[in-house]
Image (cartoon, rainbow, N blue to C red; front, side):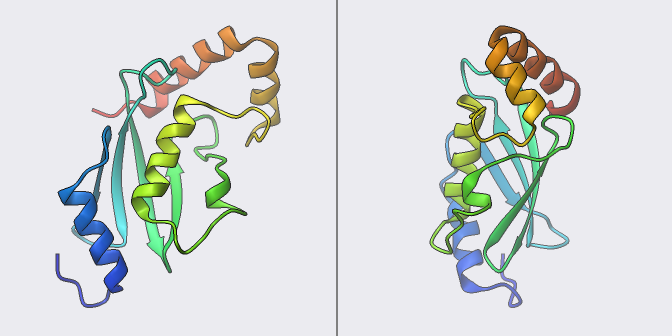
Length: 142
């Protein structure tokens, strides 16, 4: 995995991800560009995503992890550590574990989509079923 163009920190974190994977998370750099990661997160137990593989493509730039997913309509997520709570002290592993935790416990009080949050608050059972369906249609990896 030697790439002299990568900061030592990224190389070290990547080696750790490969040698000590987080439970339910697989992350590996792209062969073409080691700043691009292919991430697969198993849907957490007792979540709308259970039994599915959530595929995430991420790009590392200056230690910032930008996430694109196939969750929801826009393919984005709302996670404070990717916005105003970002810190250079965060590791790639920590960010991925935070995304996994968000799948287990969505926060409708800090939504990416106001409409989805309103639906979640007014009829959580129906909203969970919608999340399961969207996951089946748009986020299930093979």
